[in-house]
Length: 504
Ligand code: NAD
Image 1 (cartoon, rainbow, N blue to C red):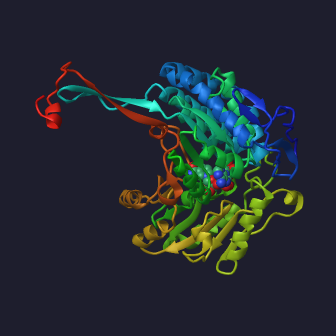
Image 2: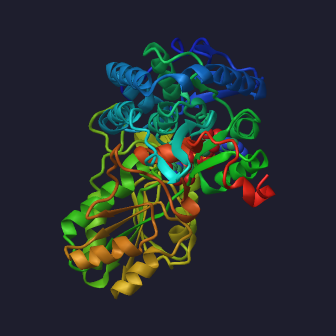
């Protein structure tokens, strides 16, 4: 493995960021951030416990009146500076993200970090466009208008697959709208979230507006969700944990935003550009080692193209270079942990009894054996009802199935509980038009799979959750609407009083 990355000095003060200062957790429990490419410990830290969450929520409450009361222009200026600070630290952020996640440095450099900077710039601009519908005299005697107000302290919980981007997606719309935030990143990957919060402070965003508690889901996470002073829970993660979070949040009647798991179909009609579909399927299923909630996981290919598609994908997967994530030539890094790699391998091993492993299906040998690597894997012949087709594997595993008529393809594509993303491949505008109408997913790509833009929403249907990240639509999540109705007659005895107590 090439040159590794030492983070111990940078996080010597601890892995919590509360009220504008780094500090150590007080849970009494330690957790290690591990480099999944080697299994070596990058940083041992004391996790956040309930007292740390309480301190972070208190800091966010203190910061709330000032930040909510700032003008949209002031918040926009601070967010523009924030984008500049992040851009200045791009290389450092990319290297830290690669170190803690094992994701290839090309991906961190060309996707995670620029995406985060762009999101920050977007929300800097969007902060000045928090609009309501028009004001007017909807009753002849009153003027009505809408105030769009922040919700309060938002408790955000994020997963490990894109830690920096997830921190950005959770924090930016919330603070652009005037809320303050306590973010709990995954305990596996807190480093770039801490750097993100530090960058916010260095950009002049007031202390306490962005706080980070690094701790386990069961104590820091649940305490944050159940906290009476937290007005909203914004969660991104798996569907089972999302259900648990929803149960806890309901007890205190919190606003809830859930971005959950996915099992995206990739629907290839027989008039599709085969080369484009094959390349799209390999890129879409292997991005971030398949640890992407929108990854292409189930390809349904119309019978005339099926054999050629399977061969094309298998051949292309065989060219993918596994290696040191810091090597710019590496296409596929390790999975997030050895435990997760074993979970992915378990799905594939069980599938051997009902499906064919066309390529992959094993961890690589040799130099990479110490890391949490898994070969790009293609499965065929899996029944639609099998777990390989129905459950989120979250690894570099693509299942391919044939179909005959368009109706059948659309029905199979829709046949899982999830609804986060889907793609359709065809040159026929009527076929793609029908598919985009009928597929029940928060995002449907046509002749592509994966790209995202800050201006457009990301979020699920059905078991993939509800609520939108990115885009101006996310303000619907992080603001509440107040109707102000103001009498404009200055009359003491109003006409409508007669309805209640006659003419007196
Ligand atoms: P996870 O559900 O295990 O954990 C997500 C976060 O929840 C972590 O910070 C974890 O510590 C915390 N958590 C765990 N138990 C908790 C509890 N009882 N109470 C409160 N918090 C708790 O998910 P993961 O393994 O970190 O990430 C992978 C999952 O995230 C996949 O299902 C993926 O599809 C999903 N994901 C979804 C989106 C989206 O936008 N829809 C984006 C990225 C990832």
